[in-house]
Structures are given as C-alpha cells and as structure tokens.
Length: 340
Ligand code: XIL
Image (cartoon, helix red, strand yellow):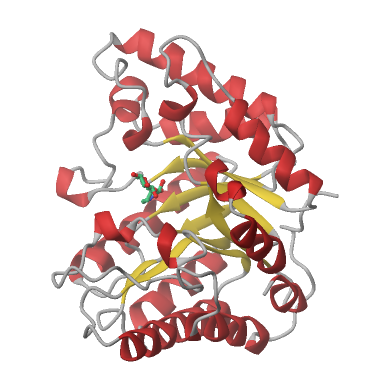
C-alpha cells in the first residue's frame, strides 16, 4: 500500500498504539502497508499526564523509536484537544490552565522536534451548536486564551519545530448535511482569518470518519470545499479514515463490498480535488476499530470498518484504497515527504 501511495507522491498510514507492536502479524502488516504512523493515545495530553504533575513520554518514545527504526514518518496527535485534557485541569484558574497548556505544548514539541512529519496542533476547534458567530467550540482553551488560542498554539509549535507540517484537524467536514455545510463554511472563514493573521497553519486535517450508505458518492459541496481549501494554499491530510458499517445489512460479504465502495468513492474525490500529503486510517484491522464503542451495530455484530480483517487478512477495502491511490494522477512528491 505504501508503494502505491508513494507512486502518487503521498504517504499512507494508520493510527497505532504501543500494544499493536506486541502482535507480530499486525506489526508485519504495518511495516508492509504504512509509510506514516499516528500514535492513537500516547501523545495526547491526558495520556502523557496520566499521573498529575508527572509527564510520562515512555510509550510515545517507544512508538517514535519503532517509527524511526523502520523509516516510518510520524504524525503527532494531538497537542490541544478538549477531549484529552488532564482531568484535574479544566476547573483550575485560567492562568494556571494557560501555563499548563503552554508548558505541555512547548515540552512536547521540543521533545520530538525534528522527528515528526506533522502535528495535529489543534483538534476539533469547531462546534456551531455552541452558538458562537465564529463557530468556535466552547472549550477550556477558548475560555483560557480567547479566540486567538489557535494562533498561539500554531506559532509556538512553529517556533519549536519549524520542520513539521502543522495541521488543524477537524471532524465532520466530509458529511452530507446542512450542519456539515455550515461547518465547512465556518472552517473556511476560520482558515481565512488565521491566514490573514499569519498563523502558520500549513495543512487541514480531515478526520474522515465515514458512514457507509450515508456518505454520498457525488458530493458537490465537499468537492467545492476542497477546492477552496486548495485555493487558500493549504494541503490536506486524511487523518483518521474509517467507514462505519452500522447501517449495512449483517451479511459479511455485502458489508465488505459496501465499505470498500465507500472508501474508493471518497478517496477518488479527495485525491482529485486536494493536495493530499498523507492518507491514514484509524486502525489497520477490524479488531482495532474504535467504532465498536463509538458506533455499535444494533444487531450486535462487530464492525468491519477497516482494511484488514481480524486475522490481519486483506479485505475488499484494502484493494479499494490501493486502487484509489494508484488511480491518482501522478504528481511530484509533495512538501510532506517524510524527514530523512
Ligand atoms: C479516539 C480513540 O480511538 C478511542 O479509543 C478513545 O477512546 C477516544 O479517542 N477523533 C480523534 C481521535 O481525534 O483522537 C479519537 O480517538 C477519535 C475521534
């Protein structure tokens, strides 16, 4: 898979966690298929600070060693995300939270400076249901720093790791609904505001948690959005792609075909319209999908949402993704090449 991606000038990878490396078949599949990996937990603020006041980067260091020993690029996930704040912090006085958030960002980016391909600097900044005109989500970061928290985070990260591709990562931009279209408009307005301020955002991360039988094959609004992102001079990373099959019939073969078709149609569209640096799935094999808890099937069957089955065998989805990567117009490797 990684060679198919490389032929089209981009990286292919997946989210992994340290326990994945205990499985030889899964490790072999990661080394066969991937050229970039994303720590699923190990670099999140609450994971590093499992013990209050005592940062533990050992698991992240182990993943970074695995990646560098195998010439895999690393996508850092994620510095500031409202869902991954150490539990004791959000209620603290604002200045204490500000200091803790900045210290964590500075310490973490400095520790891995020069080792990472890219960082999800800020994750999921938008939530129109919170009612703000700018669409920003009411998070502890917004409360502590104000709307400039995004600029603050990106400027700090850029200072401390000027070689990393800095990514603003968001969910739900790819969906087909009035709420998703509102979110796309708000994201474009946000990106334009930040660009005007000189905030060093280089890339838009599109999480791509898709739903089979809901994700449209033709998607003119999303296609237009991707063109506007490209016109802003931004590249794109598909950061967390998976296809939930919770709306599909139980029949395994039918599910696998529908899921594969969803992957193929989605990637064909994105690769046609965006300057894509990397495509990553959120896990490589079905036994690792978070969707069994996030999107459980009503019939109790386990999700078949990823590219490899529970026995680490290739599914139709694997071939569909590889076909999309090979189908892409050939292009010179982009700025997001893995650091040597
Ligand atoms: C998820 C993990 O996969 C789960 O295991 C965990 O319980 C919650 O976080 N968007 C993100 C990821 O940016 O960090 C989330 O990962 C999935 C949604």
